[in-house]
Image 1 (cartoon, one colour):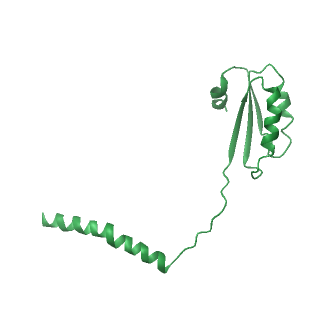
Image 2: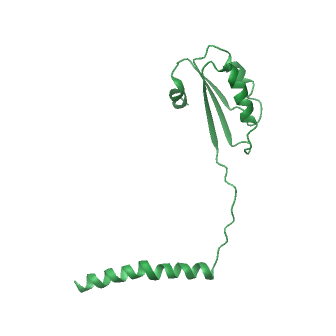
Image 3: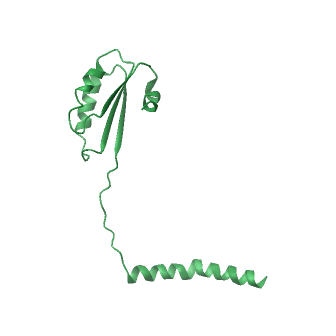
Length: 119
């Protein structure tokens, strides 16, 4: 029973006194400066558009004007059973850098959730 007590006490002393003291001294004696770098993850933008021909061109223009590094934005337009020419209008943006990566024509009318899941 005494062995269990002393081993538990030594573990608590190590966890609350010795290890934090060692970390504190290590940081003070051997500092490692932090060199912050800007972090830009890859972003995928999925636009589920059904009969949005009027708004889609404006939306794609605003996506082109985003202040984000080139090549890190993926834009996908899902034409969700549209009857207007928004698929044809959106394909004209595919030649510009950072504009549009793919247009998917979907014959179903499943809404936003199904359009995102089909990719």
